[in-house]
Image (tube, rainbow, N blue to C red; front, side):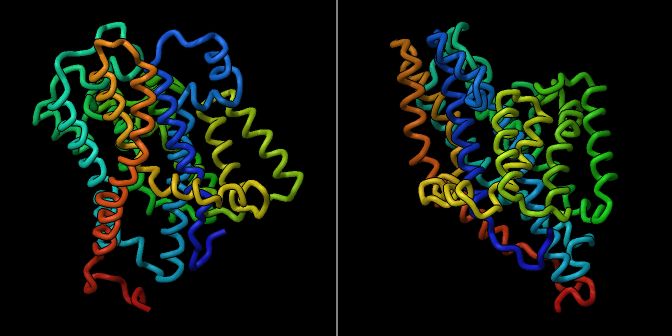
Length: 373
């Protein structure tokens, strides 16, 4: 249910931090060949498949973004009718989102570019597994490539400096559309129908179900973006709908469903599991209490920076130790370094970007009458 002054749901910050950690561990796992069979089994046939697959954590990010951003927009519109659904307000919102996402993205690319200049000698051996060997630092970066990546205009394996930016392409594009979901208040079925049409567009464009990241060309990246509309739409619908708090039996059923769908790791199952997690986190109980622990709140606070810095560090560690052929040591070093580097980036880049974004406001002369009340 939408409120006029929603409190910050810190439990969701913790969930975002856990999802970011899952992505970090996933990429570390992919960089290590020849793991024991029992490890591969754990990461394929149990709820730990979240780490083995990695993608479910990104889908959760999308659902959570749809929920949090729509919740904030709906609350603002309730406080100041007309303050969201007008041209200047949308332009201000778009600029804010671009600054909040763009400056940390730029910082992560600068970090990766500097590390590559200092460390890179040649591509890693062809047998190097995972994104480290295929999609990161395959060649020395150029200013043209750097600019395309900074503007989120790359496609395929074009994000050579930081492959995780593929998700920010979709995050940024769809976030710019979220103010328009307020048109669907009280009409959630049409909202979901529009989102599913987007999924159909992705399939008709040849995007593999449950596997698409970016298309092979810039045009196809827009079809790929359309494929992720259902994840954002479910989060938005959850923010706009009147959903009752789960009782004890419903919470137990939801927890079991989340575990089962984590093992399935299908996009639509993950979307539903993400919605259930959001509901569980807002219910006073053991799960919500656990999500309020200081360590998890700190992890949530640095989650975006952690997501952005870990791949450049993983690439750097693997290139530094390429002659020793110890990918497990490189993975351990990269994971360990990711946390302090993310904390620094959060403090010196991400938080200033947030403050700068908050200073961007629509022209007072163009705010609708009554919006100042």
